[in-house]
Length: 240
Image 1 (cartoon, helix red, strand yellow):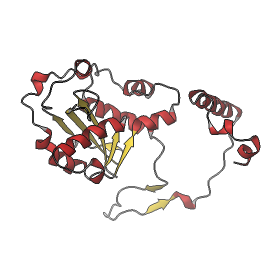
Image 2: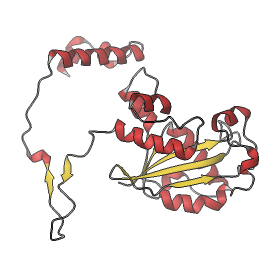
Image 3: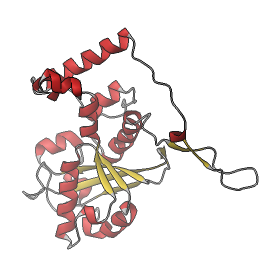
Image 4: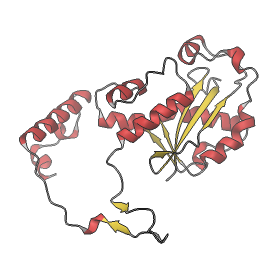
């Protein structure tokens, strides 16, 4: 599936209270590879940014005065996003702003255009419970170079998030894998279904068991003792 990593910058924190989008950055992935087919818009929000927001993105009100309004780019944006999976860090925030902008120009919510929305923040929280999972923290943890990020910018953040997402999902490819794109004669090569192979069962060693127990303990701590394996009776947990 075609994937679009998306980020926005806004005048403030609440679309419902009148804050608007000032920047949209989109990075395209096809087959988990960057294509270079990206989109980037600066927008005139028809209002000033809050002081705290200015400190985050550094995009002045004066700079945005001659930029297009959302209505002028809405069709181009939707055509670009159509039928793609969107990957967004803290997706509810960006989606709420995009939906409000679409509502203001009389268009349907984003869900009617895209295939699905994946929240990379929720993915990171599941993989790294109890850890900081901001974009900067994930860049550090996954060794993604963010040295050029002094202020938030939608396109730069989308580019960084694309690298982070690829690292987060490494090893999660389908069991159906293609062996080459075509043969020497130009004919498509057949798919190999790995489910037909009998795979060996590898038992975890003591070190791996220890790492697993530590991960469970971290998850238990992050949930303040509310993890399911602590609340179920021992017999039920063993049966599971």
